[in-house]
Image 1 (tube, rainbow, N blue to C red):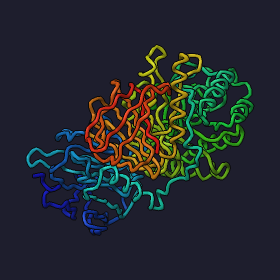
Image 2: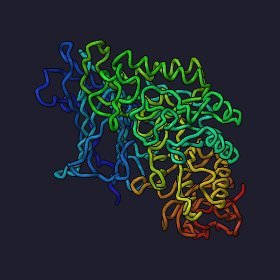
Image 3: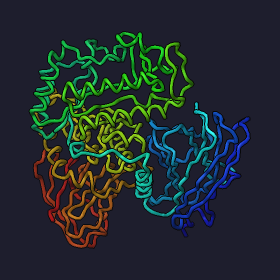
Image 4: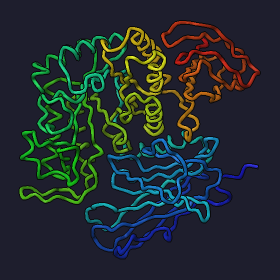
Length: 596
């Protein structure tokens, strides 16, 4: 008999759960519990520091019995979702890094215990440590473990959800909870955020020319891309990578002799134009270095570059002015803002010529981006802003309308996992894949796997027309056609990614008109959703020429048309009602369709 989730024990947080870390000054804590519905509780915690002071670390602990729990999930977890023992690492969250939410799930993908914090701006440390003595997870939150301004009191709500709903639905409700809070109201998402993208990064790196970029924009537009992102390299004559020249953000005229004219040529193709900026970096070879070098965080950025400190008003204004100029003078449609997670919590610097007007780096970053977006939206209401995983929390949804998976070149498994992880928490914010690339000598089926991994996100393509074989181009054209035809289903349908512990061996999506199931792992048996005559698509994103389907919910027999990855019909098959498990021959990287 399967034990009840968490036995008869309900998690409780009380004033006794809250204590100082080390020799913190005296304080008092009060906990008020509000039951939203059975199994869903908000714990409002009020901390009184007795006097106005910079708070010392305070921790909150509670225990979750490990009963019918097989794994955990949080937004920056990576591939290991196991229940790691008491040497588990601490997860840091703040405005520009991750999001304060953890989920424990069962073997049947049900939520067993999810907790989330109302404070997604300030630095908070979270640890879920398995205690060997009693097989329980010690959930620990540490507040004030970073530089803070002086305060007298502080409030935070911990929402704990133990309702046995599908894990992905539980995570989605946390996203909705944050979205309803005025401090985290998400940015509007124009439809253009859902259009396929051509990116110059993997295809060009820093070796850019206006004519070659325009040629590949023309090509990708014909394939179905409606946005281009000009990545690193446009701002420097140096092509050796690194960030020593960042900070001035002037166009390299040897590459783009007339940048506004170049942008106009691309926009004439009816493509949106976004430009990359590494937000915090200033390099020693930039002209800006002398005026900004003393207003940088103690922690180095990359190589010789430093990371600007947003606690200084002059730093914030410099960044804002830069982006205003780009939007106004170049007539671009948006920005790709990179390395935002380098705004880490640090002790303040003390230059002689200016005093910082803020103490907390994450709070200063929040103020910076609030001011950026207020001014940019006044210039262009539908401005597109891309942020990269892992700066993808509720605070970042206020500013960005595109969240992209973290870099994973030529790595289909990571692109799938990262885009699905993003989808779980991002609401209507457009989730994009990392830029797709592959070796031109790869088989066309294996190359197609890189694209199928992006199916449930907006695909970003980063290969050159003259670098891939004609067969690869045909496959790419077919994939984009397939994706565009189903865009509304894929981006706005009801998503069900199964088995998070195993990195989503199949993913399903449905709306009132159609369903789609994509299978990513060989030998996995994918349960098709109840179809009721709706259009059905099945994608075989594995290296085997067959898929295994649980058809127990299919009430009527369906005829399938089978296609290879080039879009050529190669066979027909039937799904029989009444037979639970069926194996259907579908080419590797191919797909099957049953019409409504």
